[in-house]
Length: 242
Length: 324
Image 1 (cartoon, chains in turn purple, yellow):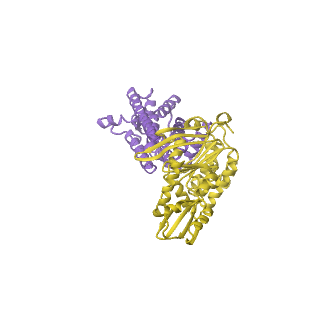
Image 2 (cartoon, each protein chain N blue to C red; image 1 turned 60 degrees about the horizontal axis):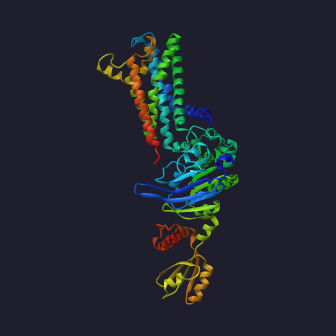
C-alpha cells in the first residue's frame, strides 16, 4: 500500500476546494494587508503592530485550515465514502492522519503567505524568532486538529460550514487575533484559558524570547488532551459496528 | 489468482448460522451458505429479505448477533486488510474534487496488486469521462465509476449490493456484459438483487432469501425450474379442491365459485390429467404465472398488490421450505 499517493490526492482535493481558500488564505491575507499596512509603525500588545497582526491572522488562517482538514470527514460521511474506505486496506489511523497532515499542509501555506506579506510591509525578525514563532504556531494547532476530527464525526454536511466558520471566527476573535481582548481584568483571564489565545500569542512569545510561559503550555496541553479524547470518542461512536 | 496462497482451496465466503436483529426486527434468522472460489452467486430476494444486512455482515460492517463469517478462511477485517475484497455498496456516492482517473489512481494505491487504471477505465466504459471531475458525472456514469472503484483493487472476491438498482434496462445490460468479461478471470462474485431475471441471467447459483432466511439455494437452472410455474384456469363446478391438488403436475389449487385455478409445476402433465379426470372442465386457459408470481411463491412473501391471490401460494411455499 502506498499512502503517499493517497495523501497526494487528498491534498489535491483540498487545494481544489475554493471555499477553503477563502477562510484560511484569502480573508486573513487581505485583512492583514488592509489593517497592518497603514499601522506598520504602531505597537500592539507590547510588540510591533504588524508582527502582532501577522501572528493573529496566521492563527486565524491556520486554525481554519486544520479544523477544515478534520471537518472534511463530515462531507465524506455524508456521501457514505467513509464506509467505502473502511472496505479498503487503508487503516483508520492512516485515514485520520492524512486529514491532519492535509490540514497542516494548508496551514503551512497560510503561514508562508502571511509571513511574506509581513516581510513585504517591513516585518523583520531574527531567524531564531521566526523559527520559534512557527514552531509555536504548528504546535498550537494540535488541539484544533483534534477539534476538527471531532467535528467531522458529529456534524452533518449542512451544519459543517456555519459551525466551523462560526467556531473558528469566535475563537480567533476571543483569542485576540484581531486585537487583544480586554488587556487585563477578569475577561482577560478568561480568554487566556482559550487555546486560540496562545496561538495568537505565538508572535509575542517569540519576540520576547523563549516561547509560551508555563501556564500557556499547561493550558495547551489540557486542551490537547481534552479534544483528542473527544475526537477518539466521536470517531468510535461513529464507526462502531452495530 | 493474485493471492494463490490465500485463496487456494478455501471457500471464498462461508456463513455459518448467521443471525442479526435490529431491535424487534429479526433481519437475518440463521443463514448457512458456503461459496466456492470462482462462483458467481446471486443473493436474490424482495426488499426486506435481509440481503443487505447479510452483505454488511460478510463485509464486517455489521456484527452478527450469532454465527460467523469467514472470507478465504480469515475474518472479513483481515480479508479486507489484505486487499482481497472489492465492494460496491448500494448507497453512497463519490468524493468530489478529483477526476475519475485521479480517484481510481488514489483508490488503486491502497491495494497490493491493483489493476491498471486505464484498463479499468476501458473495461467499465468511462474512458471518455476519465478527466472529468466526479461531481460533474451523470447518475449512470457515477454508478459505473463506483463499480470501477470496486474493480480497480483487483479483488479475489467482488461483493455488489444491488449494483444495478439505479440503472435503466440498457445500463443494466451493459453492466452485466462488463461483469461477464471480467469474471472469466476466476473471481468470486456475490451480488444482491431483487431482479429475478438478473439473477437468472448472470449467476451460476442463486441463494433465494425471504424474511431473513434462505428459502432456496441451488444452481440457477434448478431455481429456474422451481420457479417456472404456470397456472391453469378453468370453469369446473362441484369439485373437491383436494382432488385437484392431487393431480400430477399440480402444486396448488383454489376456487372462486365455479372458477378454479391450478398452480402447476408441469402444466403439460396437469392439463392432460385434468381433462381425463374432469372432462366437464371448460373455458380453459393456461398462462405463465409470471416471474413475479413465481418469485412470490418461492419466497412466500404475499405481494402487497394482490394479497388474496397469493395467499395460498404463500402457504405452499412455506410447506416447500419445511420440506427442504
